[in-house]
Amino acid sequence: MRFSSKYLLLSLLISIAFFGCKSQKNQTSSKQTELPKTQNPPNPNGDLPIKDIPKATIHLQPLSFNLPEIPREFRGVWIATVVNIDWPTQATDSFQKQKQDFLSLLDYYKSLNFNTVIVQVRTAGDAFYPSNLAPWSKYLTGKEGKAPATSENPLTWMIKEAHNRGLEFHAWLNPYRATFDLKTDLLSPEHDYNKHRDWMLKYGTKYYYNPGLPEVKSHLTSVIKELVDNYDLDAIHFDDYFYPYKIGNEIFPDKKSYDTYKKQGQSIDDWRRQNVNDLILSVHQQIKSSKPWVQFGISPFGVWRNQDKDPKGSPTRAGQTNYDDLYADPITWMKNGWIDYLIPQIYWSMDYELASYRKLNDWWSNNSFNTNIYIGNGPYKIRDNADKAWDNPSEILNQISYTRTAPNIQGNAFFSAKSFFSKNQDVAKNLRQELYQEPTLPPSFEPKTEAIIDAPVVLDITSDQSLTKISLEKPLDPAIRYALVHGANELNLLADSEIHPVWVGGVRARSLEVKSLNTKFLAIRWIDHYGRIVQTQVYQVP
Image: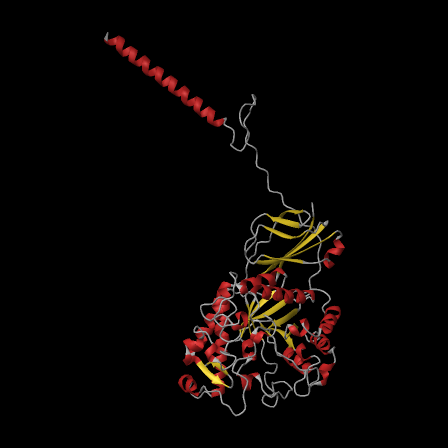
């Protein structure tokens, strides 16, 4: 019995070992013959589900066809809101009426092939937008501090409508003017006159922020930060009012702050210029730290200095100048790279004896210091000035033609919108027919640090009776600002076809839509925050 049990136990162990090895061998064999998951397994009976192989994404291939470059020239118009010069026509108009009037201005200047609107959003310590730092403007609603009767943000809406037309929107502010008159009882409790009376200086018939106070510089920089952070602006724009134009027999009352803050041995004139320089530098730094692509531009008085004061000045005899009277020194701003563009206001005729448009164009072209220079023109003087040269309706056209001969000047801006829109329409018509026949792009800028931008990839282009839709492989790079789309049935006609701007403004769009083109060929120019063309693509529409 003992032998038999031992034998049986040995036989049982051998059997278990044999079948265990066989089972392991079968499992290993099964793993080796298993099909990859991406392949479809055999299905002889047709009763098992089959997983489809995903197809590779197919996108349209652009044609190897080169479109000519679109010309670059700044063509801007100032839309003044102070005392309702240009818009709104009446502060008491309904917001709907104000919107219609604003769109009329945009459409009119778009039809003249302009590319930029410079819209006054702060006139005198107020705002045309909801602000934590200033009350609503009375020029928008009829009463300072009163909000417009709408749920829309007026500034957001204005920017969007300008961009929809391919127009840059430059937000124009007057930094130091606090009131437009002495009727302080009409000011909002939220106006800085009432909140910070110690910031205010009375001069002539207005109150001004005291440029010599550090807290004023800080406050005005905060005003800029609020705008740049919250709105899709193309530029911040200051006009020519720094220290106020001098009034005979009246001294600007800033001696107390001068005595407090001057440096040892510093004259009051140099101290005042330093105050303005400090503000310009602070605003520049604030803009570029928030959104480096937002431009900072200034339109100073047209004369820096007369030659009798400085041999480097212009051959002019202006009664007041930037440097000596307004304490503004645009040469310093340009040399230091604090501004992106300058628009000197040269509102005189070609050969005006005291300040010739011709001579000042030459002077600014020779003193641009690697800064974009555009010339500010004054069509408001046409047929309405003691200088008889303005009786000639061709004066403005002659000025623009001369500006185009200056090597370092890249365009013009016109004060103000109603000068062509409401009167002198014959001059505007000639401008369109003779000099502004074709649309242009404003000058572009180079970023301080190199940025890599993903070029858009188009998957498909489809059209129905109302829209042409351009579908993209992935969301647009947020640095893409807008696209210029145009179509034609012949490649050689593309360059001259109507351009349809599509503003995307960093929304990372996956598709674009324009009014139906139904053309054989389509061109897309992708433009970034700095105005540079990232890529030009030409497609044959499937």
